[in-house]
Length: 165
Length: 193
Image (cartoon, rainbow over all chains, first blue to last red; front, side):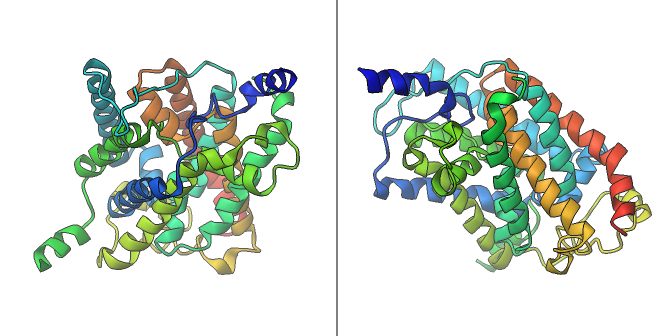
């Protein structure tokens, strides 16, 4: 019982509130291949649509091109319709589970952290996804940016209880 | 077959790329009940390599292996698209953006990234410090503080009509506008562009 209590205490610190709240059943190694395939397709789209371009991000923040707004807007629209269809028709996962999507709770971090991320997005020309695709497509120096982003994540984790949230 | 390769090699328009990215949301949900998100992979990297007994990193990251495999896939996708399907022509950038950036000191607009900045020879210079080290730190720190990035909040969260994600997305954009219009001109001058 004591150990249970301890782990209960830790729950808010597990990724329950982050964007991939999937502390569910661990996957078998062979079933991980499907995520690799989705990732590969996703990475190809990033590079082929030039979303990984530092210049595209500059166009977006200078309001000089509709391109990125079109990409993000149509992605949300398709995601929204998909989730509505999944909910409406109670579409199950391939292993027959009910689809579960966690709700996000409001915290101050979404404003402060969000603004900080925005500053970094405009200077690096990348959010985390494109960082990986930039490295893959040959801009290997972005590896340094990625390591620094991991360091930033670590520093947040170290001081998260001291920051307003 | 050649025609198909040629068509794929062209840059894809937003109305092809956006919906394909949007389809990642149901694909991950239906394949394994996973919520789309990328920045948490950075957290899993910390948990796996340097947890240092910090509670925020003390969890069973192996259960999140799908997320790490997913971002490795994104990297591999970058390799495939960048080397096998790459566009032979220079990127087409809005003329006004090109004019603005020329005024800030950039001259090479041929690649996806400005070669004057994103270059190994800049690693130990002020350019490297601002564009790689500080920029990357802000991305990693900010996304984790916000609890997500463009994928987790803007795409997954807004697709699921989450108000906190709308607030986060507005904050991302405000940060980006502030950097682009208020800080970047000074930074670019300072680093010697």
